[in-house]
Length: 320
Ligand code: PLP
Image 1 (cartoon, rainbow, N blue to C red):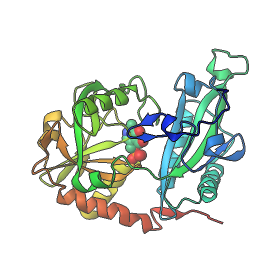
Image 2: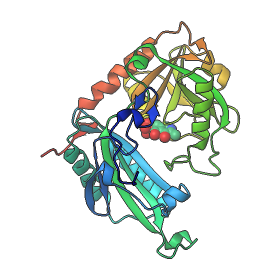
Image 3: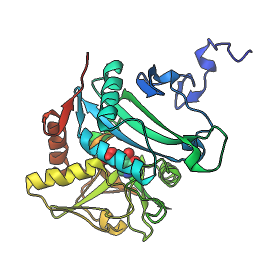
Image 4: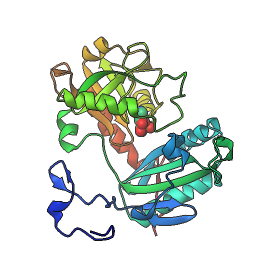
């Protein structure tokens, strides 16, 4: 079979779960790359890009819900701060990036989208080992909104396992630089699957709870909230929980969260741009309190989605 021959029989396509899928298919969406807007299937980078070879990149993800970006300013702040810390430069300022993100979403037509802006170190024309000679590459894309937890999991709560894997320490990588160093998180995820759980938390270098693949975690005890303070990405959804608690008169603090205290919590939830506030009702096979989604979690989930219609927290996409 020549490399271009199409396999017509779907059953010959690789099996992913219980479905045969075309390995060359992509989610419907639009990317911005090298000054052009492209369908996702055409947005490709060189294998010599340091982003790919060395995970030398930073990114941010914002979502669009009901046709509006949610807290885009905070995501842009974090992205531009990451670029500066990594000494990367892109040919766009904040307004330029904002316009590109709007265009990606508008061209995609998605009313609910997962929108990523990223910059890789790029490739050096001479394959130099000196990162200063690489030409930084900015890209962005908008694809359909995705969530860490599916509809069923949002209703009944996630089943989580605590892995013994340790998150890369902040002395090595400043976790405020949102990055693709995920081997610790992915290994944690496989630990969780091996133990019949749906997702994982991994630990900080002191053995306390840190974060999971793409999310922060909160424990609620006696009406007070706590979330790990160190060694974690300062998530925008985590920050949003603090803001909502401020409005609701709830106490929330960033502090060490031990494994024992998480398991003894009245309620546990995780937070991510990919899904918002998501309940956890089982940890390492045991129910969190009575194993049901708790009242503080439910209240914060409702408030979180209400805020998506508030112009102080959201901005309409410029659809044509
Ligand atoms: N922690 C990690 C490692 C992440 O990758 C993410 C998001 O992708 C989060 C936490 C949650 O951050 P945010 O609420 O800004 O999406």
